[in-house]
Length: 306
Image 1: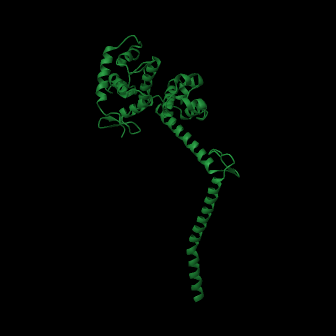
Image 2 (image 1 turned 180 degrees about the horizontal axis):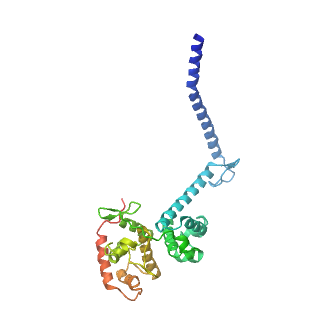
Image 3 (image 1 turned 180 degrees about the vertical axis):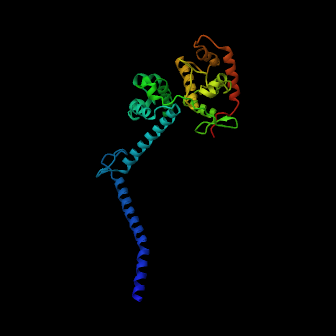
């Protein structure tokens, strides 16, 4: 009986100390590995070893190589997610959009692309860039792909999955709320910032063209700036797409006519091509209304993102 109790007590003690022994073994192995790793990092050639000169042993990536590859993978994934976000706002074929972007930029590794951030065929890239940021290049790319898919070797039927406008009915305290939680004005300001446009001026045009965001075009077609296409009044799949389309149209006019928007008569000069399609003809009534709205908007805090 005593022998059985002794064996039972001994078994309990062994079980008790097994986890401690395993923990000690793990710590010991880890310490040895860290010492080896530290020692390895101290090895240098007779000249110098640059950080990108990575060591591979038995097919296993060194720590530096792993970090570099992981960083590249995450950077590419982030770029893809940005493209997916904006493409979804235009209801584009996501897989095809990514395929085109990767092909045109050589998976974002093309040297010219890295300088310009312009995602476009070579014959167009120099005309539309450079852009100050990757996001600015993506927004321009997605908007152009939606409008002119033939320039990218595709077609409207292949790229546009659904052209039915999705109506934004989310409002809080009278403010339109976008999918990402920003107000309409904040989202418009964000897109304007990508291209260095005057947010108050761009929003003032929206107020004038949409009757302070009450027109049918604004509500049901996401056409916030009274834009016309070859077939008449334009529609956009989402309000985000409408904002981007409006900002791009203003940027296009400024770029195409090389307008100096710091000029004291800038709004009047801009009114010619925007309203009448003629730089030599000023739309006085439109100019006066937009100027009034711009002054009112500038006195409010509409664009700050908390």
